[in-house]
Image (cartoon, rainbow over all chains, first blue to last red; front, side, top):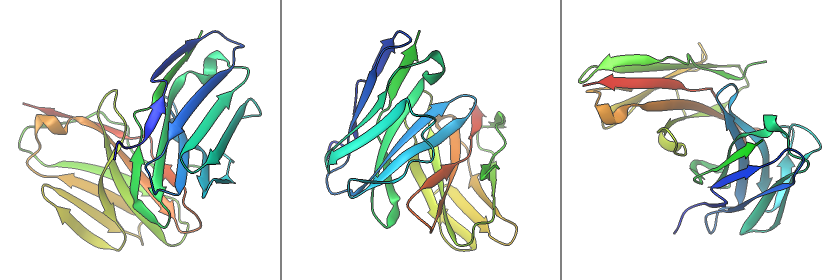
Length: 114
Length: 111
């Protein structure tokens, strides 16, 4: 298996623009997580899906952030409008439900908002 | 309210020494605990999991869990320069599939 796939790997955009991050989980994994990592706050859970359904989005910072999982093999995290404070590395991870020691991370998307 | 706490370091140890990394967590009942290693510019990778009180050994790594005192630690024996990384402690509470991470401890092993 290719592991968790994320795109793009790097994104540079200007404040106010829309940003869409993409994730393909490991085949067969039914839980998907979006995290944000910064030096100041570490690795924060933004939202997670179980069987394509959003279970907990309490970590989503504000209404500018939204996430979808239209099917078992694809998820998006959208920021609209983007702000400089959104600059961070965004990781997607997937697990086999009920087996937390199967969590694997994607390579991350480094987002820079100018 | 902090859920999972780690000393940010940096922690420096000489090659061949034992590195000791610590993590404390808020009491949320039954939990599962994990240690992840993250090299600079890379994604976290799972190196150890522990579910019950006591020690769990895997090669040069030993995880120790004490639920009464609410801490989990990771010992790295015979530290190597390749162990230089940030180590993240994570907790999975049985109320869901969420993982809560500490901010990580930076470890440098000096040759």
